[in-house]
Length: 148
Image 1 (tube, rainbow, N blue to C red):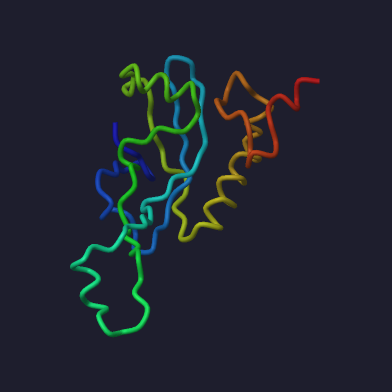
Image 2: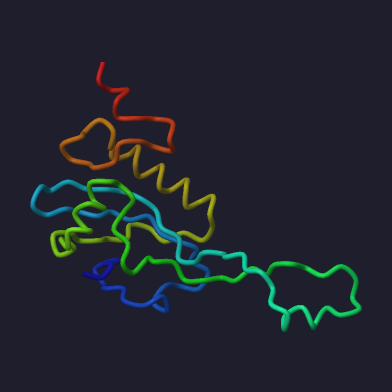
């Protein structure tokens, strides 16, 4: 199952508007009706060691760099979430039990965290363990804090 955004199926990174850094999403597990809200970036920066061929460009130009940064597409096409129960179901081959919906496209890293947090609090994900898989927000607020 591909991602859905405004009722349209997203199959390729070229379908995202220019300048999109990532998105906030909701994954729904149909047998239980439970949901998971999270965020996903479209690209990762990888630090790679320069090869001898790369270093030839810098001959006689002062201190040589040792690494270069390469931007690589993330695993967004096959991603379902980082929550352990979801990961377990996916490893068992149960991808067809889920739908994946993009809630909001975001242009930078800081706003991505802001909008994910906004959706998590608006939906009160920690207060409804029977409705949401999420068990913490920002690593600061935990579901266990509500078990008083």
